[in-house]
Length: 324
Image 1 (cartoon, one colour):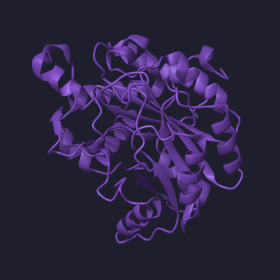
Image 2 (tube, rainbow, N blue to C red; image 1 turned 120 degrees about the horizontal axis):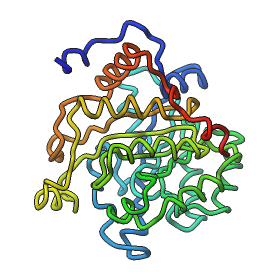
Image 3 (cartoon, rainbow, N blue to C red; image 1 turned 180 degrees about the horizontal axis):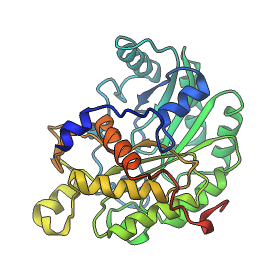
């Protein structure tokens, strides 16, 4: 029944939350496509700087496009990505998305060189930079701030959880205080600030997951990506799930739908929501196997919010207003 309902478009086109696609069209007057890039950087919880093994849930192959190969130069990766998307749609503007691993974890001169190469590519109007909150410096922020005078620059930090015990459990090797410091450093610098959060990490209660919305609302973020925990092959969490499945409370679609709609109601109204679920390749995904795509979950969320007279920020608390 849910599957059938998810395939149906909603009758009211006005969404009861801040939608990323609408934001991009309003800002640029047209669709803008992200092109993923992998420059072969590592992470401090992989190379021994802070830890080894990386995040327990992480397998970069689960979200990296085929054209995104670190053996190829940035220019080649960008062109392959542009060719891929322009075959299907009429798109003329692109954002170079430095996606894999930690894309500020290198010498600043190298980082500058790579970012500037991407911005020189025809059609690229800006950068989206995926990184960790403990890999940000004042020098990097000043460089990005200068770029933002002429380009769209978004810094997307992997927050993942606002609970330190969870961050330790999944081997992030940073704290939520690191996250708060990073956003404070980058605030009011002309840079769009994004956050990435996973719902359903081991040991977190429903109440604690909803409190993430409250804590994130206190940060000066412009964009938010949220998605369900996925257990994928070739990760430590896959082995943990195999050995102790009772320790995991993976969502079914209805439970996740209920959680996300309540989460949205607690979220600061201005935050643009970029994603609600993630879709790992079927050959890598162990659980949960929903068979739902992002647009289908969007349909269900939109319908539920509308039917129940809910909207983003409806339960946003007064003490969260203007926190930065």
